[in-house]
Image (cartoon, rainbow, N blue to C red; front, side, top):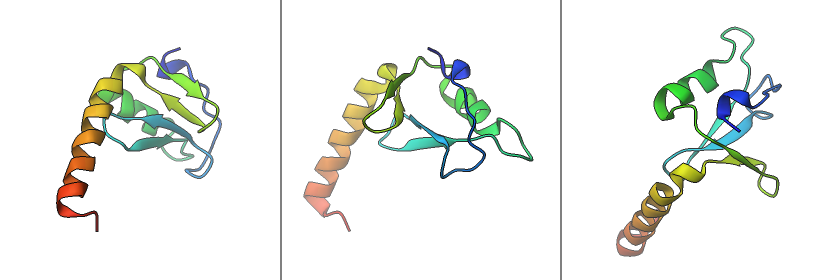
Length: 87
């Protein structure tokens, strides 16, 4: 399913849906009472209306198209932490 097809009912960040990005970060989306669906709109503006798959174990929407880029980012970050520390 596309991100635009996911039903978002949460009205705050604590209950919002989590969607992968191209890094190790997750974007949290909810319906803002003042601005509506702005979080999803901004995500789609940045990454496109991507295909998502729900991961029940981690309550996160995975983006298979980002897997290679995420893996590369995570490996580079791990190497940086190994070399320079992670403080």
